Image 1: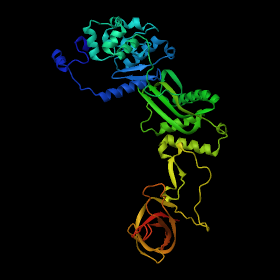
Image 2: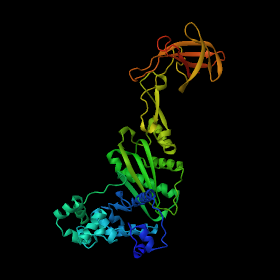
Image 3: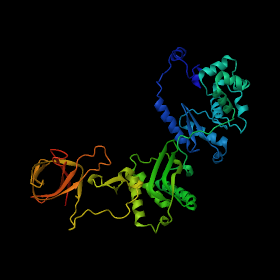
Image 4: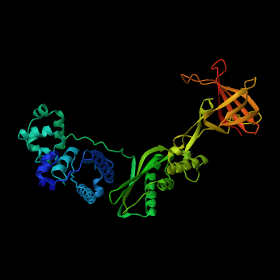
Length: 464
């Protein structure tokens, strides 16, 4: 490296570096941006294996067990990764070994090395102690003791090293030599199923992308069908030839595995993206990952025999893919007699439809006993006059005077004192009609002389 040739290295004091190189250009480090870039590179590396872990501040671990044959062997995989990362403008040092610690040490001091299984101890023995990923004061102590290579450190007894540097250093040394290796912690959860297509020439046409998604969906359906399962969450990953990666995720309210339905949901999602899917120079890898599955009831299997409920469920999935799951709501009845709490709106994808019809609130003559429009929050009104029965004669609402021609009530609704520490006051509801023929649903809060001396009046809804 040019910096190393000038005597510069990480950790060197800035004053010393400027004394050695007077025209040195200094740029302040941006750790959050470096972390974001490292995560972007990790996303790109998922093309090789889903088991990708961060090794801050500048490293990545890839568990390529069982996938190297897809790239012509371990050496071919390593060369492909280095070549493509270098083409993106990165300086890459990589190595492949049985344990992550051995691979890190070799990548730092002997990049490009592919160690056969069991050969780690011999491969790392001539490496300098700087290749050990340990604290600086330990490296300094090893050099003061005359131990300049990992092989020389291994020549000391375990008891001696443990008493001087601790048991964690001994474990690190063993793992660097390819022993007692542990699994890496992937940055993102490993998908349940994956299917992917690699292209000799990057694809850019939308029809080719749709056909690829359809083909991948069929591959996944073939695997899920014998198990009687369908997908609930799917993620499509589009790997651009220039290193950019785009993730598109869809969710379904019910498990499905029909490839045509899956492609339609992805198309809805892609059409709704604020930032359209830009192929750039083309996608060289397209992957479809299954993140969640569920058993499909027997009666729900089949495309031509879907019931009305299934058609509605698919419509909900399409709308949710286009507008977002939190925007497509379903009203669910609640076991309460408080009007504003009689139902709640919940995302339709995550809830089941109500079994049976809703309870109809009507009088014996068919007149609705509840307003067609119920306000989310009752609005205060002014009632300057009541008759002897406690019914309002007129009231002011939104700065307008309404003289009443007819009133019915009261319908008394008490608060649910068993649910709340401070349940509030009892309500007396009235259905009223003013002289212009407008119907209102108003209530008086509080019982006179019992709960409050000055009851308050509210407008809660508009009748037909």
